[in-house]
Amino acid sequence: MLLGYRGSGYYGMQYNPPHRTIEGEILAKLLEVGAISEKNSSAPKKNSFMAAARTDKGVHAMLNLLSLKISLQEDTVAKLNAALPPEIRVWGIQPANKNFNARSACGSRWYEYLVPDFALIGPPRSSSLYQIVGGCYREDGSQEVWDAFLEQARRRFSGDELYRLQDTAQKPCEDDPLMQDYVGLLSAALNNYRLPSSKLHALEAAMKEYVGTHNFYNFTTGKLSGDPSAQRHIKEVVVTQTSSRWISVRIHGQSFMLHQIRRMVALAVIVVRCQLPPSLVRNHFAAGVRKYIPRAPAQGLLLEGPVFDQYNTKLRNLKYREIRPDRITLEHMCRFRDRQIYTAIAQEETQRHVFCHFVRRMNCLVTPII
Image (cartoon, rainbow, N blue to C red):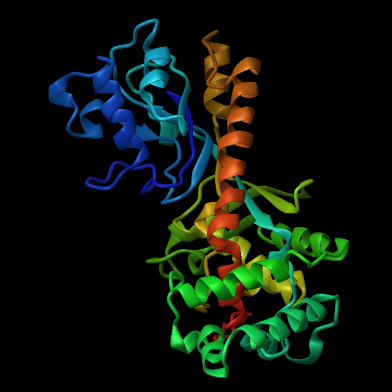
């Protein structure tokens, strides 16, 4: 089953009752359209569910692939799409041999991360992050934006309020009306920042440091530095500026660990914000050296699609249909991505200021991470 989904409001891809998940929604609708029996509807494993890539809470997918056992009819796809909510679409279902496993057959995955250009603004002089960097920072227009924001903030909030809002030790709640007012003001100020082209090139250079095989144990949780499973191979990274003030970071790798991409992006963003050498990214691959890396927001992450190159070669040699969307399906997928996923990412920033909070939290970093 080829499918796409907008992850907002879902607790990830994997079935996890009582939480609302993509697999849970698919399972319920398969029963509704008669593709699985009542006795097999209580858990995905009864239908041999296996995803090519698991996505976490809030993460989207233009294309993912599920291997599963169902009763397939000519109109199953149409019935499923009629029953499913509009944020989940089934692109197609094709038969496979009984031993097919979506995860093991998948050779690599493409992900995309969207980050607003204002997230690359330099840290304010008064911030902990600026103090960590020391005197190597060169002015690029960032301080003018921060000075204007702080002037407005001092007029809006009392000294005690401003201290609590800016000091991470106070841990202000992001749902606090005072914090919402503060971040709304910050959002308006950050939108005045104009990204120099040099910073886009710097982000590309920092992200390309990940290409190759490295020890990514600092980029996930629950791994020791000597754990061989922390070795991951990144094939390619592509960084481009979109027309709407968002930056697209596309990453092609064999497989990824929990939170790995979000930490990869966060570290690269900090390197660029602080005008540090891209090569400093490599410090986080060193065995035995535990370093703290924050996570970039889940809302910016999108699974572009799994890749089945080796498996498709076998299918092609046997003259079987390959696992890939045709041209018409790909057009539908791209429209879904543009209207459902990209729009949701932009709307969430407008409504909840997710990346503004990310910038604010990074400013408060007190742990040297470089």
